[in-house]
Amino acid sequence: MRNVTLPILLAASFSVVGPVYPVHAETDLGKVVSGIAQSLIAQETEKNAYISAQRLNTTRAYRDYLAKYPQGLYRANAEQALAKLGADVPVAPEVSTPPVAGRSQAAIEESIGLTRTQRMQIQRQLTAVGYPTGGADGLWGSKTRDAIARWQKANKLGVTGYVTSRQVSLLAKQAGSDVGSAPEAPSANDDVLEERLLSLTFDERREVQRRLTSLGYNTYGVDGGFGANTRRAMTAWQRDEGLRASGYITADQLRELRKQSGD
Image (cartoon, rainbow, N blue to C red; front, side, top):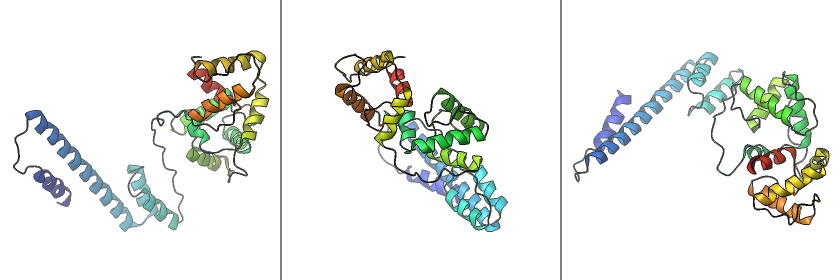
Protein backbone atom coordinates (compact mmCIF):
# COMPACT_ATOMS: atom_id res chain seq x y z
CA MET A 1 0.00 0.00 0.00
CA ARG A 2 2.89 2.31 0.83
CA ASN A 3 4.35 1.96 -2.67
CA VAL A 4 1.16 3.22 -4.30
CA THR A 5 0.09 5.87 -1.82
CA LEU A 6 3.20 8.07 -2.13
CA PRO A 7 2.98 8.63 -5.91
CA ILE A 8 -0.80 9.23 -5.67
CA LEU A 9 -0.34 11.89 -3.01
CA LEU A 10 2.44 13.43 -5.06
CA ALA A 11 0.26 13.54 -8.15
CA ALA A 12 -2.60 15.00 -6.13
CA SER A 13 -0.37 17.82 -4.93
CA PHE A 14 -0.02 18.98 -8.55
CA SER A 15 -3.80 19.03 -9.05
CA VAL A 16 -4.46 22.11 -6.89
CA VAL A 17 -6.70 24.56 -8.73
CA GLY A 18 -4.66 27.23 -10.42
CA PRO A 19 -4.28 29.08 -13.71
CA VAL A 20 -5.48 27.34 -16.84
CA TYR A 21 -2.52 26.21 -18.97
CA PRO A 22 -2.47 25.19 -22.62
CA VAL A 23 -3.07 21.50 -23.37
CA HIS A 24 0.60 20.84 -24.20
CA ALA A 25 1.63 22.29 -20.82
CA GLU A 26 -0.77 19.94 -19.06
CA THR A 27 0.67 17.04 -21.05
CA ASP A 28 4.23 17.98 -20.08
CA LEU A 29 3.21 18.31 -16.43
CA GLY A 30 1.61 14.89 -16.57
CA LYS A 31 4.84 13.38 -17.90
CA VAL A 32 6.83 15.02 -15.10
CA VAL A 33 4.43 13.69 -12.44
CA SER A 34 4.47 10.22 -14.01
CA GLY A 35 8.27 10.18 -14.19
CA ILE A 36 8.65 11.23 -10.54
CA ALA A 37 6.08 8.67 -9.41
CA GLN A 38 7.82 5.85 -11.31
CA SER A 39 11.19 6.85 -9.87
CA LEU A 40 9.82 6.81 -6.33
CA ILE A 41 8.20 3.42 -6.86
CA ALA A 42 11.49 2.01 -8.23
CA GLN A 43 13.43 3.36 -5.24
CA GLU A 44 10.91 1.92 -2.79
CA THR A 45 10.99 -1.46 -4.54
CA GLU A 46 14.77 -1.58 -4.37
CA LYS A 47 14.73 -0.58 -0.72
CA ASN A 48 12.34 -3.42 0.08
CA ALA A 49 14.59 -5.85 -1.82
CA TYR A 50 17.59 -4.81 0.27
CA ILE A 51 15.61 -5.02 3.54
CA SER A 52 14.55 -8.54 2.56
CA ALA A 53 18.20 -9.52 1.97
CA GLN A 54 19.16 -7.91 5.26
CA ARG A 55 16.55 -9.94 7.14
CA LEU A 56 17.80 -13.20 5.62
CA ASN A 57 21.42 -12.08 6.14
CA THR A 58 22.86 -14.78 3.86
CA THR A 59 25.47 -14.70 1.13
CA ARG A 60 22.91 -15.75 -1.47
CA ALA A 61 20.42 -13.06 -0.44
CA TYR A 62 22.95 -10.25 -0.73
CA ARG A 63 24.29 -11.56 -4.02
CA ASP A 64 20.75 -11.81 -5.40
CA TYR A 65 20.24 -8.16 -4.49
CA LEU A 66 23.52 -7.13 -6.17
CA ALA A 67 22.66 -9.16 -9.28
CA LYS A 68 19.30 -7.41 -9.59
CA TYR A 69 20.61 -3.94 -8.69
CA PRO A 70 24.28 -3.88 -9.80
CA GLN A 71 24.44 -0.11 -9.34
CA GLY A 72 21.89 0.01 -6.51
CA LEU A 73 21.60 2.58 -3.75
CA TYR A 74 22.51 -0.04 -1.14
CA ARG A 75 25.38 -1.70 -3.00
CA ALA A 76 28.00 -0.55 -0.48
CA ASN A 77 25.87 -1.89 2.39
CA ALA A 78 25.48 -5.27 0.66
CA GLU A 79 29.23 -5.45 -0.03
CA GLN A 80 30.03 -4.74 3.64
CA ALA A 81 27.55 -7.41 4.72
CA LEU A 82 29.16 -9.97 2.39
CA ALA A 83 32.60 -9.10 3.74
CA LYS A 84 31.37 -9.65 7.31
CA LEU A 85 30.00 -13.05 6.26
CA GLY A 86 33.45 -13.91 4.89
CA ALA A 87 32.19 -14.13 1.31
CA ASP A 88 33.89 -12.81 -1.82
CA VAL A 89 32.55 -9.44 -2.89
CA PRO A 90 31.69 -9.37 -6.61
CA VAL A 91 33.34 -6.63 -8.66
CA ALA A 92 30.87 -3.91 -9.53
CA PRO A 93 30.14 -3.75 -13.27
CA GLU A 94 31.50 -0.66 -14.91
CA VAL A 95 28.96 1.83 -16.17
CA SER A 96 29.55 2.82 -19.78
CA THR A 97 29.52 6.60 -19.86
CA PRO A 98 30.60 8.97 -22.61
CA PRO A 99 33.98 10.63 -22.13
CA VAL A 100 33.98 14.00 -20.40
CA ALA A 101 33.74 16.74 -23.01
CA GLY A 102 37.18 17.78 -24.20
CA ARG A 103 38.95 14.78 -22.65
CA SER A 104 40.24 11.89 -24.70
CA GLN A 105 40.32 8.28 -23.49
CA ALA A 106 44.09 8.68 -23.27
CA ALA A 107 43.67 11.61 -20.88
CA ILE A 108 41.21 9.68 -18.74
CA GLU A 109 43.65 6.76 -18.49
CA GLU A 110 46.54 9.08 -17.75
CA SER A 111 44.65 10.58 -14.81
CA ILE A 112 45.18 7.23 -13.01
CA GLY A 113 48.87 8.09 -12.72
CA LEU A 114 50.41 4.81 -13.88
CA THR A 115 54.20 4.74 -13.83
CA ARG A 116 56.18 2.97 -16.54
CA THR A 117 56.89 0.16 -14.06
CA GLN A 118 53.18 -0.36 -13.50
CA ARG A 119 52.49 -0.27 -17.23
CA MET A 120 55.06 -3.04 -17.71
CA GLN A 121 53.41 -5.08 -14.97
CA ILE A 122 49.98 -4.63 -16.56
CA GLN A 123 51.41 -5.92 -19.84
CA ARG A 124 52.71 -9.00 -18.02
CA GLN A 125 49.34 -9.50 -16.35
CA LEU A 126 47.47 -9.26 -19.65
CA THR A 127 49.78 -11.88 -21.12
CA ALA A 128 49.32 -14.08 -18.04
CA VAL A 129 45.52 -14.14 -18.41
CA GLY A 130 45.69 -14.97 -22.12
CA TYR A 131 46.00 -11.64 -23.90
CA PRO A 132 49.64 -11.32 -25.05
CA THR A 133 50.97 -7.81 -25.58
CA GLY A 134 54.10 -8.78 -27.49
CA GLY A 135 56.40 -7.73 -24.68
CA ALA A 136 56.50 -5.80 -21.42
CA ASP A 137 58.35 -2.58 -22.13
CA GLY A 138 55.90 -0.05 -20.69
CA LEU A 139 55.31 1.38 -24.16
CA TRP A 140 51.69 0.67 -24.96
CA GLY A 141 51.62 0.27 -28.71
CA SER A 142 48.94 -1.24 -30.95
CA LYS A 143 49.51 -4.80 -29.63
CA THR A 144 48.98 -3.75 -26.02
CA ARG A 145 45.93 -1.66 -26.90
CA ASP A 146 44.48 -4.59 -28.81
CA ALA A 147 45.14 -6.91 -25.87
CA ILE A 148 43.40 -4.48 -23.49
CA ALA A 149 40.41 -4.21 -25.84
CA ARG A 150 40.08 -8.00 -26.14
CA TRP A 151 40.33 -8.40 -22.37
CA GLN A 152 37.68 -5.70 -21.87
CA LYS A 153 35.34 -7.41 -24.34
CA ALA A 154 35.79 -10.79 -22.63
CA ASN A 155 34.96 -9.21 -19.27
CA LYS A 156 31.93 -7.34 -20.66
CA LEU A 157 33.49 -3.92 -20.04
CA GLY A 158 33.42 -0.87 -22.25
CA VAL A 159 35.79 -1.72 -25.12
CA THR A 160 38.10 1.30 -25.47
CA GLY A 161 41.63 -0.11 -25.38
CA TYR A 162 42.35 2.23 -22.44
CA VAL A 163 42.17 1.11 -18.81
CA THR A 164 40.42 2.64 -15.82
CA SER A 165 41.52 2.34 -12.20
CA ARG A 166 38.82 -0.27 -11.55
CA GLN A 167 39.98 -2.32 -14.53
CA VAL A 168 43.58 -2.20 -13.31
CA SER A 169 42.45 -3.68 -9.99
CA LEU A 170 40.32 -6.34 -11.66
CA LEU A 171 43.15 -7.40 -13.97
CA ALA A 172 45.58 -7.65 -11.04
CA LYS A 173 43.11 -9.88 -9.20
CA GLN A 174 42.64 -12.13 -12.24
CA ALA A 175 46.36 -12.42 -12.86
CA GLY A 176 47.02 -13.32 -9.24
CA SER A 177 49.46 -10.48 -8.60
CA ASP A 178 48.70 -7.11 -7.07
CA VAL A 179 49.81 -3.97 -8.87
CA GLY A 180 50.16 -2.31 -5.48
CA SER A 181 50.67 1.35 -4.81
CA ALA A 182 52.75 3.37 -7.20
CA PRO A 183 56.45 3.18 -6.33
CA GLU A 184 56.75 6.78 -7.44
CA ALA A 185 54.56 9.36 -9.08
CA PRO A 186 54.79 9.50 -12.88
CA SER A 187 56.98 12.34 -13.98
CA ALA A 188 58.29 14.09 -17.04
CA ASN A 189 61.25 11.70 -16.95
CA ASP A 190 58.89 8.86 -17.99
CA ASP A 191 57.92 10.83 -21.09
CA VAL A 192 61.51 11.76 -21.90
CA LEU A 193 62.46 8.07 -21.83
CA GLU A 194 59.42 6.98 -23.84
CA GLU A 195 60.05 9.58 -26.56
CA ARG A 196 63.66 8.39 -26.76
CA LEU A 197 62.53 4.76 -27.04
CA LEU A 198 60.08 5.69 -29.80
CA SER A 199 63.14 6.46 -31.93
CA LEU A 200 61.25 8.92 -34.12
CA THR A 201 62.78 9.33 -37.57
CA PHE A 202 63.56 12.73 -39.06
CA ASP A 203 60.39 12.59 -41.15
CA GLU A 204 58.29 11.55 -38.14
CA ARG A 205 59.61 14.48 -36.12
CA ARG A 206 58.72 16.83 -38.94
CA GLU A 207 55.30 15.19 -39.05
CA VAL A 208 54.77 15.95 -35.34
CA GLN A 209 55.72 19.59 -35.90
CA ARG A 210 53.43 19.86 -38.93
CA ARG A 211 50.48 18.33 -37.10
CA LEU A 212 50.93 20.50 -34.02
CA THR A 213 51.01 23.59 -36.19
CA SER A 214 47.88 22.51 -38.07
CA LEU A 215 46.05 22.28 -34.74
CA GLY A 216 47.07 25.81 -33.81
CA TYR A 217 50.22 25.07 -31.82
CA ASN A 218 52.88 26.80 -33.87
CA THR A 219 56.33 25.19 -33.73
CA TYR A 220 57.79 28.04 -35.84
CA GLY A 221 59.34 25.69 -38.33
CA VAL A 222 59.17 22.13 -39.63
CA ASP A 223 62.81 21.19 -39.49
CA GLY A 224 62.75 17.88 -37.60
CA GLY A 225 64.49 19.40 -34.62
CA PHE A 226 62.58 19.45 -31.34
CA GLY A 227 63.86 22.77 -30.04
CA ALA A 228 62.35 25.18 -27.51
CA ASN A 229 59.51 26.27 -29.82
CA THR A 230 58.43 22.70 -30.56
CA ARG A 231 58.64 21.72 -26.90
CA ARG A 232 56.56 24.77 -25.99
CA ALA A 233 53.93 23.92 -28.62
CA MET A 234 53.83 20.29 -27.51
CA THR A 235 53.44 21.31 -23.86
CA ALA A 236 50.54 23.63 -24.73
CA TRP A 237 48.76 20.86 -26.69
CA GLN A 238 49.26 18.36 -23.87
CA ARG A 239 47.93 20.81 -21.30
CA ASP A 240 44.84 21.56 -23.38
CA GLU A 241 44.18 17.82 -23.76
CA GLY A 242 44.45 17.19 -20.02
CA LEU A 243 47.68 15.20 -20.46
CA ARG A 244 50.88 15.48 -18.44
CA ALA A 245 52.47 18.62 -19.87
CA SER A 246 56.06 17.42 -20.18
CA GLY A 247 56.85 18.69 -23.68
CA TYR A 248 57.89 15.16 -24.71
CA ILE A 249 55.61 12.95 -26.78
CA THR A 250 54.60 9.37 -25.95
CA ALA A 251 53.27 6.61 -28.21
CA ASP A 252 49.69 7.20 -27.06
CA GLN A 253 50.01 10.93 -27.57
CA LEU A 254 51.41 10.47 -31.07
CA ARG A 255 48.36 8.38 -32.00
CA GLU A 256 46.05 11.01 -30.50
CA LEU A 257 47.85 13.79 -32.36
CA ARG A 258 47.48 11.95 -35.65
CA LYS A 259 43.82 11.28 -34.95
CA GLN A 260 43.07 14.92 -34.16
CA SER A 261 44.90 16.28 -37.17
CA GLY A 262 43.19 14.00 -39.67
CA ASP A 263 45.29 10.85 -39.95
